[in-house]
Image (cartoon, rainbow, N blue to C red; front, top):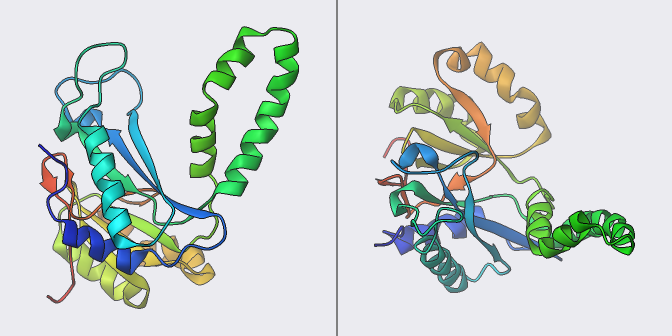
Length: 238
């Protein structure tokens, strides 16, 4: 079993969406378990079961990293049990905006400088915080955008007419459209004008009133399987 069904589509997606990395930038990919896709899961939030940082735009290296992420996803367990998380519940996501490692490190250093003072008092909480240093660093890198290149419009309905209307509104800004398990992800090239006018344009067209449309931080990787559905590219007019 695997969550990858089309490596060429993965290559196509990363080649078109991900511009060359600069300075300390990385792209973030992750495997996340979703309660709504599984019969057995999960108390509380949807857990992230694995993460991989992409430090290069070399497509063969990217494919290797996605294969590694897929392999890690296949060995995911419900916390403190011997029960494997069903593969159909796990989604491979990526963040289309590059992250800054240095910004994430600075945020983490600021936090752990405070924890150092607590260690002098032999605080159990401080020792526990240092035990999870790698998790905190990964979380802070995730929060540290280096550049905002795209906005991801999450259309939570399978209605092609909604896509046609969105295409009319944002045609010059649309970079990629994925069909997902529950609808579509429309990746828009970011600009101040797009960010400022996004919701007014949706409201004026009544799209936001008729459909469940929001912004997403992560998008399922095309060429992989999301809750039993093969995430694929949509090209309007094709």
